[in-house]
Each structure stands twice: as C-alpha cells, then as structure tokens.
Image 1: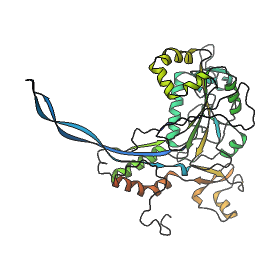
Image 2: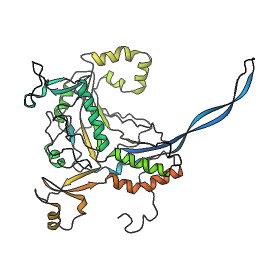
Image 3: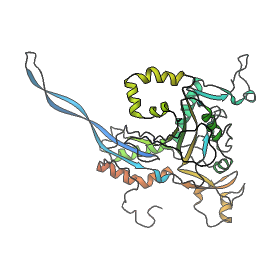
Image 4: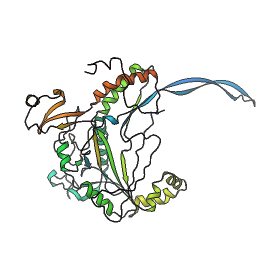
Length: 420
C-alpha cells in the first residue's frame, strides 16, 4: 500500500574521478546504485492517498485499587485507508532527440559551490561608505565569490518552491527578481532551441534572454576534479517542468471529494514525487566509499564515530567535505517548439494560410522568432483523460502497490469523437 508519507528517495549513482582531469572522450565509469523499496522509475509519479479517522471501543482490564482488576470500556482512534494508489506519469515526459537542456546556476543564486556553506558569485552590493551600489557597479564572477546572506538563502528556497508549483524551469526570469538569480543554459544550441519555449498559464515570466553561464558544466567539473578534499561531492539534479502542479492538485482533490464517502470532512493527500532525481559523483578513496554504504554509516553513528570525528572533519576540515550543486537537466511535459519554416513577425493566421495543413490554431502561437507549436500533454488534457479512472478508484476503494500507467476504459471511450 502506498502511504501518504511515501516519498521515494532518489537513486544515487557514484562515479569516481581519477588523479588526472577527464578527457572529453566517452568512458565507462564505475557506478554504485543505492535505493529503497519505494523506488519505481526515474520519473515523477502522482501519489494519491485517502484516509479518515474512526473512533472504536474495546474492553480493557484496569486496576480496581484493591489489588484486582475490573473491566472498562475505552475508546481509541483508528486511521482507515479508503484508497491509496500511484499513477506513473513517465509517458507524459517529452522525449528530447538532442537531449534535455543542461542548466547552470546563476551567479546570484545561493547554492553550494565547493564549500560546506552556500555561496554567490557576486561582489558586495554596498560600497565602502555603506551605500547601495548602482547595478552597473556590481560585479559578478568567480573572483567575487562570497558567502550567501540569509536573505539570499531564503530567496533561493522561495523561488524553487514557486517554480515547482507552477511548472517553470529554472532559467526563467520572474518579475521583481534581480538578473543573475535565474539559471543559465549551458550550450548555444540549447539556448536557441529553448528560447520562448516555456509553456505556462501564468505568462508573467520571461524566457526570452537565456543567459550564457559564467562557467559551463565542463569548467565546474574541472574545478571539482582539482579539489583535493576527501569527502567532496558533485550533485547533478534532474527536474521536470511544464505542468501547474498546484492547480492540478486542487482539481484532483476537488474531483476526489465528489466521489469519496468521507470527502466532506477529510482532505485527500496528493503528492507529486520525482524519484532518482540526483546523480552524485564522489572521489575514489576509502573514506568516501565506506560513507556511501548506509549500513556502515549507520554503525558509525551508533558508535558515535561519525558525529564526533567524521562530521566535524567533513564540516570544518580544510581537506574534508565540499559540495557542488551547480548544474542539472530539465525535462518538459509541455513546451513550445519553434517551427523553422516560420519567419519573424509572422502571425498564426498568416502562417496557417501559407503552410497548410496545420494543427489546431490553439496549439500555435507567435513569438519574436516566428511561430511555435505546442508539444506534449497539458495538465488539463491529462486530467480529462484520467478523471474517470481516478473517480472509479476512489469509489472502489482501490489500494494498489503497482503504479498505474494507462487509464481504464470509460463508457463511450471507444466511440469515434468521444475525446474531441
């Protein structure tokens, strides 16, 4: 049974660098996979769980104060699981023939850049007199790397949460935030391909000027390899974007409550879980290897060796730990794709007259580059296809450990024109 607390942890692959910096040629790295029973695939799942509380009674024997016992009726709460099932959304992720774009953290983003604390690559924003500097006077780059402030740390967490809820990738620029906070895109080809590509109901974001990174992925990897720290770690993250998960969660919850006998007084627990979303690269030394083993690490905690010896060394030692969390890849569930046969300044109507036949005009839009076509499945389309299946699972009180990948046949589904 998939419980509401079932948050799968990401698989962790560990490749070990050699003494020399790697070449650009492909190679087969040594890899160690670590996971648990919750893991299903490398992509997101929709977990849905419906429980309610019931109060039951039972007879218990309690002391009577005279050396004996007496029977007493007592009440106790019981959590009843009405339904619990998982829907696998892997098939909704768009396949990228050229690979997903690799994003690099912005210079102003408070992240791990090789230390045990968060940093930004920016000179101070105040001058020697304590006054704020003009934007043109603020310098970015590795040579100005400094420890992040608490406000900058909070801003990163708030931004990441907001992007996840509305389904935006990390390279978009949001209103009111300073330039350099958003991520950059690693290659010229990807910057051209993903400019004006983000799909979202909220159009207040800007994905027109994808920025060139101060350091590309190879340069960050070289910096990691040059480090002599024994417990260093390079983490490469994978994210999914393109769906407004906050709105989708509300619609699913609203629909479930219509078919749930306890829906009037209880709220279903709906979670979107991205699994195996981190690839970790660690050094090839005995200490790093043994700490990658859960059982060994647990024993070191029990024996107090880890908290009293290893953790202080990793946290404060000059040759101890350091993390790089500067890069990742992004996978779209819905996006706009530029049509190469369109021209700048062209409208959807003029394009449709010039290049027939075309798909529905609702799947086309004009951008400064020309015309783009919507690719992938929108969250509303997915919901329309799955709402009958989810409703039937709720009514049937379905409890299923195996992820569902296809909606069940609904009345009328086989009829021509049923799906529009």
